[in-house]
Image (cartoon, rainbow, N blue to C red; front, side, top):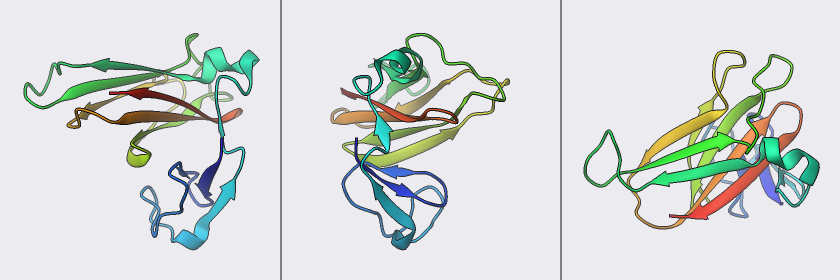
Length: 144
């Protein structure tokens, strides 16, 4: 899948255009480069997809914020991805309607390959992109 990648931090714009300023590191639009193979999907590499494609779960009722919040959980892989120093998930990025929301940085050996958000939005298309240090970026999407 095509993406526009920040050459400084690896953030991938999935809305078809480079931002004026990278929402992760602040790099200018000139730091972005289009990459037709920036993000993999389950259909791209079937033999790797079960450990790399994010699995998204939406909890309509938040356990922490009682009003106007949905919990969004993303774990990496139907089969849990390893979190070893030599092979791990570096970041998980969240997007709503192809616009960046948040990035979670993960540390090998100390964390599981998962992240969660408390989302105010009630509708839209949620996209989750995980970055594996060996196998690149993988995406999954769902409607809220």
